[in-house]
Image 1: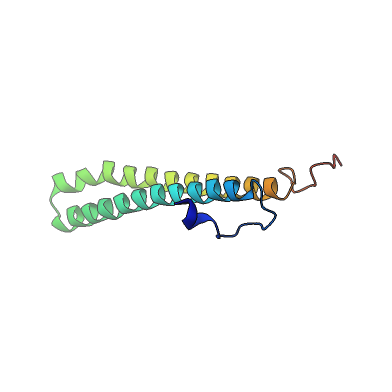
Image 2: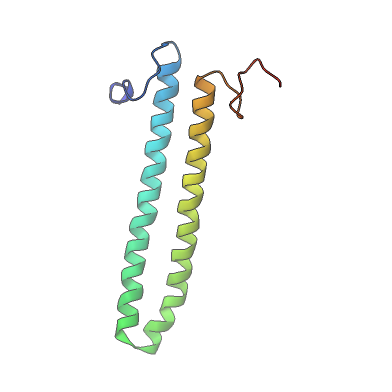
Length: 110
């Protein structure tokens, strides 16, 4: 797997950069797998909600309330995963370029 990650956006300075890139790509991959799992679950839930709604059976329609609540929770989860991914990417980018979290050179305190 390390061989698969070695050329993806690697900074050519060498050293620990390849390790950072490997960790970064592994993090991206893991996060995207989590997101896809949640989105697949939502697809299934939406189909259940549609089926229940089309049936017009009161008991089935009542089942939609917790299903829709789960869909909403899952949307929040996906949003959180993407937010964390974005923060991790920015931190990794700045780390590998020798900058602090605000994009300033590590030696500058200005």
